[in-house]
Length: 275
Ligand SMILES: O=C(O)CCC(=O)C(=O)O
View 1 (cartoon, protein in one colour):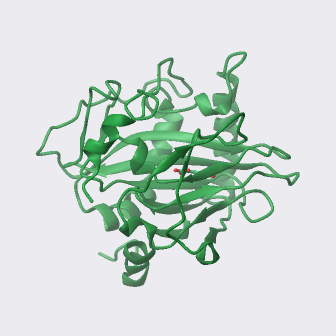
View 2 (cartoon, helix red, strand yellow; view 1 turned 90 degrees about the vertical axis):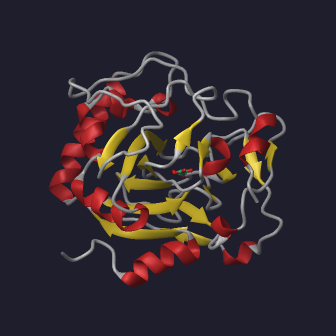
């Protein structure tokens, strides 16, 4: 059987920490995806923002099916091997003329997962480019361990409260991930990445889905809500609680979200540092 990723794409992921522009959905699929997104948005309550749409794949068959799309899983299998699970998803939606950025960060800094071996799929619902705030990455930064993340002072215009210290890197090497709607990019949990605001009059919406090999264990004392779906292969470790497949087509969750930072465990974060 031919592999979904060729050797040079796999080599790029290991060398630079990401790959991009992988086709998954066509224009017809995208129309359906946007109908589904509109249905999910209707479930937000007054005062909530799209950031609340987090782990809703546990309650929405629509989102679950995207995260378990076989083309996506074929790509991921080339990078994680035959046995891995899905455990998280969330939208990053930048409306036209919204200046909120995503500061430099490493996903693994936030995740109570051991070992650090997870990855993110970022599915473009819209074309994303330099005009509407597409993602930027520091190539190779996933190989340097976990860097200090400093708290941002004052009222920030970032989705995140922290920013990764990038002083060890030449910002002239930054690469931008430009995407066509329906494509995915994939990045390593340790890759330093972020994105600027969207001053354009086009929306920039992306859905992330996060996957880990079955030997990755979550510290449930940090995130007791952590639940997994076996995406491929078998789970001989049985480290993590399993979730039920959602029955409603468009559903939502009502629950607290807990990363290391949100759980107030920043001090304990050090225990996850291995380098
Ligand atoms: O969508 C963005 O701009 C940022 C996404 C991100 O930080 C992530 O996928 O981990």
